[in-house]
Image (cartoon, helix red, strand yellow):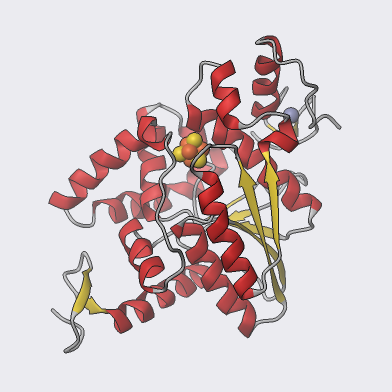
Length: 312
Ligand code: SF4
Ligand code: ZN
C-alpha cells in the first residue's frame, strides 16, 4: 500500500510503501518515540555523541541536534575516535568535522596513537588478533574515559536494529550470554561510578532505514566501509541475517523484540558482575585488569616498548 500519490522510496516490512516526505516523518517519529519509550534522555543532559562520521552516528547526531534546539537544557558534544586505520578513518572524520562545524556542535577527537602510543594498523602488525576485537575494546575504553572526563551524563551511539540483532545472535553462537546482558537500548551499570551510561536512539531503526535517511538528508558525501569489516565474525552473521530477512521480512525485528522480553532477567542474573575497577588503570572492569590493559600488556610483551599512557 502506498502512503500517498508521491513515488515511494522504501517498502517497510508491513508492506507499506513510503514516499520521501512520509519516510522522513516516519523515521524521525520512530527515533523520538524510541527515546521516550526507553526513557533514554532526561529533561536536562550533558550528552556526548559518539561520532565516527559514518551514516549511523551522523543520523543520531542530526536528530539529537534537532532535539537539543527544541530543549536547550539538553547540551550536545560530539566525540570521535581515530583508531588509525589507513585510507578509511581520515575520510569519515572529514564528514564528522564538516557536520559539526555546520551545526555548531563541539567535537573532540582522540586517537589510539596519542592515547596508547600506536595506531590500530601497527597493533595489528604486532599482535595476531581479530581487528574488530581489539579495535572495539580500545574504542569503548576511550569513549567511556573521555566521556567521564568531559562530564557527560550519557553517551549516545549510532547502533541500529541490525547491529543489535547481530550482537544478540553472535553472543548466542559464542555461548556468551553475559555479553548480551550488556546489550539493550540503554546500557550502563549504575553501581559503577566510572561507567558512563550509553544510549542507542536508533535501536528500533533498520540499517536500510538509516542508510536511506542519511542519504536523503544529505548527511554525508560518501559511504565508506572499514577495510577490516569484511574479515569480522560480525560480517558473517550480518550476511546470514540479511539473507534470512530477505526471505522472511521482520526477522531482525523479531530477534530484537524477543530479546527485549528476556533482557530484564539477564540483567538480574549478571547484576554486580561489572561493578569493579581495573587493578591497573582504575577503569570499570569485572575483576583484575580491564580488557584494554590486558591487550596493552600483550603489546608490551610482543616487544612494543613505548610506555603505555593510560596508567593513572
Ligand atoms: Fe574497528 Fe572493526 Fe569497526 Fe573497523 S570494522 S572500525 S576494525 S571495529
Ligand atoms: Zn585497565
